[in-house]
Length: 126
Image 1: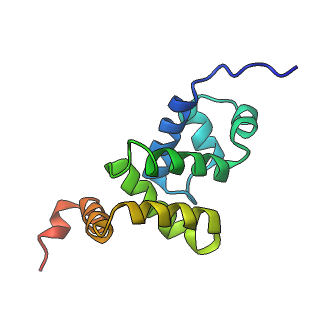
Image 2 (image 1 turned 135 degrees about the horizontal axis):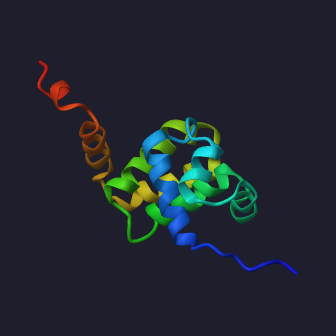
């Protein structure tokens, strides 16, 4: 008989989202996720299957839920577009759904979010 989960999945997903947003998908290690979520490696794999499985859960939560349009959701969308979409059709479909929901404002929102990450002195250069 399997033991019941002793962690709050919402908390784990929120903490993982912070790590993916800060480091990106490729640079984020399982150790980074273990440290951020306070889960054991085995629990993380059992609950989400893989780093990619956790990232997909994070994307679903942030791109298709109440977080849609938040800075965190835009950061995750940018990470997915840059690092996963070229080789991952399910992630590409999730991103397409999210972009369609932005109704024409996607380029402006994503561009603005990318500019938000530039150091202030970079914006003043001509």
